[in-house]
Length: 109
Length: 113
Image (cartoon, each protein chain N blue to C red):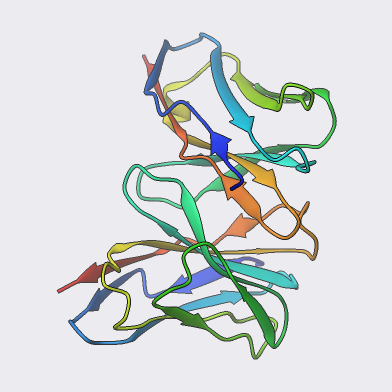
């Protein structure tokens, strides 16, 4: 059974701080990984994808991948209250994505 | 204006009734997916289709059925056999291949009367 594990949170950070979200996956075959943001009552929207070991930066967001440790993370710099949402990590298998249950992030003003 | 549309936004089902959720995309994507999300839970795959006239069961297909007669459309029927259908249903699409990003529609919330 392929699994993607995330701490459910909530992760609480003050405005302007760095939020660090973590994810581990069980399927060593997975080569592609995705971070989605989901606001309450809304559908998930893609933040970033990452395919290679190392860091990938996009604005305030940095995704990190370590395939040897089967670990993916998302850093959000200068966190804003509008970043408060649930963040879903997903790992690609042969045909589909496996999603974690998500980590709720709360950014306080 | 490309995207994925789902209708209706809210759907009410009576006992013993089959209901159909619509999903349409104009992104020219080959693959389409249906997920179910329960409160505090991640997304669980119901069915997926990588090409017209072909589809595969996901992790929780029992009580659901789908069709893929057109590339743009992937309707989901929640049958009376699904005893606990109350959930948020999400449709997604992607280009062919497992490594491709999936894009989601706005979702349909199904409630049982």
